[in-house]
Length: 312
Length: 325
Figure 1 (cartoon, rainbow over the protein chains, first blue to last red):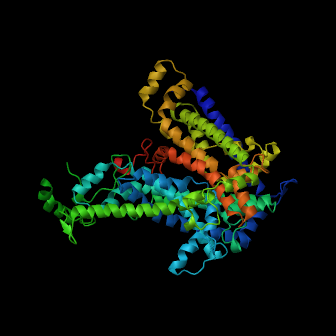
Figure 2: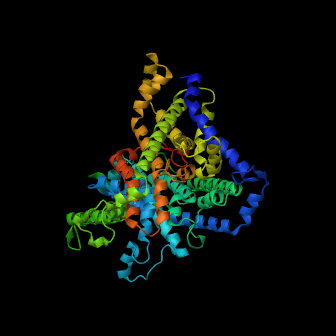
Figure 3: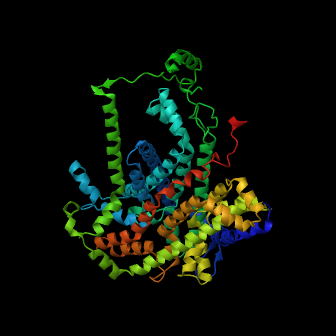
């Protein structure tokens, strides 16, 4: 229907709020990043000084490295853990509702609360993890006070939360695969692995990319879990994240200009990582050998090899 | 059946196309492997699957289970030493003395409910207008709202604090709620959903003389009930768990929310009073977990309706692929 009046009336409030709370702050943060500003006195123009600081500063470089390492480890582990897990849950006929409920819990658990529980697991002497590892002959690990293990500790929490999110999301798209495909292919002699390769994996591909992007972004912008584990970024700054450094520059050191520049860096990094991932997801298809016809259920189904094709 | 009879011809076809793998034709599975009949093997495989899933599942459940268990039992006991009779509320009483916990719960609930109501209303109306009403600027509105998705929240932190302070809303509900209301995901979701409303429904309503807002209320909203529920659940989870903004926009207990309270407690007491910290974590996270588990059917709705990463391969707005042309 055509109705400019209602069109603008219904979208107006959202537009107005978006302008006030996204577009104005966006312009403001870029302006702030070119100034020296302590939040109280008037901002003074310094040009690109803050960005120069970003490029030359070792602390920020370390934070960048932390973030890159953490997101890579977390995303890879999450995918590796959750795809087989989702496939297994989907296969299980009985107790499926129970499994779905179980994997919902880490996903919705409040990050700061779960981190404040995990913290106690990592205690070197009476923590649960070391208590379990001791009988197997693992030496006492000082999880949170060693720069290396602190990163692992953080990654474990992140993988725990994100992979359950992955499982739920993947299950939703597994539900969308028509079961006839499995029935027909098993009639034609396809085993579990062949079915996974030719039916499940192609159907999951778009959703896997969606979740990879989501989890990369949330790890790049990680703040709450890391700040509960150690407020100032852990031993030797090894778990300091970008957002944590932004927060501390802005509200502890009161250097809002510098913090704004970090914010712009977070924006640029998030955007470019997403762009790279999207381009990998859409263009290069070096791993697939077949042209992709459109499947009947709205997602692409890779053609089965001719010997498995369902002939009418 | 005729399946086996066709096999030789198919095999030849498969060999001639050299790029495609030759898949073994159907062979009847052997009746017994390692002396086990097929039925038993299938049973064993099922049992193995469940054993694996239950052990991995309990691993995933461990932190939250531990938290709940330890908040109701005296900390002095070791985990193995907890017995059924050890139930105690002492940690919660202690927590109540240390934090104004009722106030925190109230604040969090108010903020969450307000965010859910406003975000759902904003996204549903905007999504409906974009999907169903033709007006100049339709496309512009869609792009403007959806591109808010790309802006990470930490980027907005500093200007928002400045704005909220200048406007005099620091440490108030308005200051807590207002900056988090824009939802690119919501707009995207509801545009997708409302584009699929059958045209006949809309036309029938228009013939009956419905104004657009009545079509929205009587046709579109009932049509999108499950999507609205799913989105509301998503927003409430996000809102309940939100920490960064709540920490920056408030000070003191008057407008504090649970996440901030828990973190303050953890920072303040460090490695002392573990029982109280467990109790605080339980209060902070158990309500939202219970809500999500009760409403878990809703979590299955929105994801596959969202346009998947790149290919636009959604149930509706599918871009025509090369193979279609």
